[in-house]
Image (tube, rainbow, N blue to C red):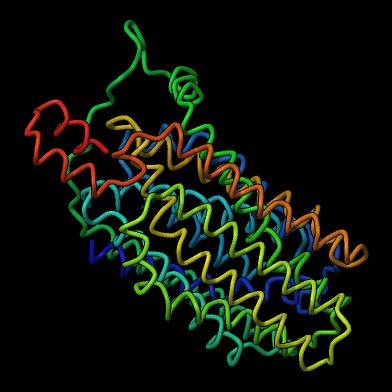
Length: 423
């Protein structure tokens, strides 16, 4: 588990080097124009949507480690090629390889965390993963910002080379991991061949997983899908936020996650997961209301900036509450041996939300300011409703694993022990 977390931090550190500067690199440094730069950003989402439906079956069939190593090598090749590319075709192909590799690493690493943790430690494991990812992204972005120089293409080649090196270093670290033997797939219908079609049919027949996927789409659409598109456009156009203040807001978001993650974890571990998610919806509703004050209220520029930074900080608090809640719940809903399939399906939902979110929120945030705030405030309240409904279909072990374990000890039932162990 320690090696997995080190690998997570290294991968995030490498991504932080390049992600904030992709647009400038393609549009200005390589002089390929805004259209090509936009296509590069879009192709990351497209590549993820293409590969993720197959990633789950590969993880179930071959195990998460071989899939992860293949994805990391693919991402390293894509990153190095992107740093050397000069033409539009090469840039787009390189971005597709980098995007596909990055996308597959997420469910593969999540499945490895599931395989190396138990019900007692899983929430803390995913909280640690999220903490290290944000820390790595923040440190990588900070150092990359000091290394990059738009007047020198070689500085960007250096950034992408460092990112590729981080992926390869992650390959070396992950190759030394020895995870427990994956459980065989259970709970398949009699006479089932275990084909991809049947596994997806079984997943879609899991009512709780379907509801969680819908809830996950709304979560990612209303928060993560707005960070660098609609919300930033709204801040600049409606609230008059400067680019430096926008950077401060993003830093505040990361700082809250890093500082609050393990404090929040103590609260989350003792609460029902569905209620924690509902609480996040309320916090984000407040965040959108504060954003409304920043852009629509008759306040000074200083107050507007403070309100806008507070919006990002409140989003960070909600993210810190979700990290030890949603990912472990996905794992608990998966039958034995199917964690890879369920993780990939949820990653696919996330990518869909991240693709649709900017497309919808960007124009609204830039032009229809009041409508934008009201719509996403209502989406946040919708999270509360969806979380409460999800709580009604979850078992006690899925919604509050701690209490379920204590009941198992009291009852001593073999069947119940097996069910909780599987969760």
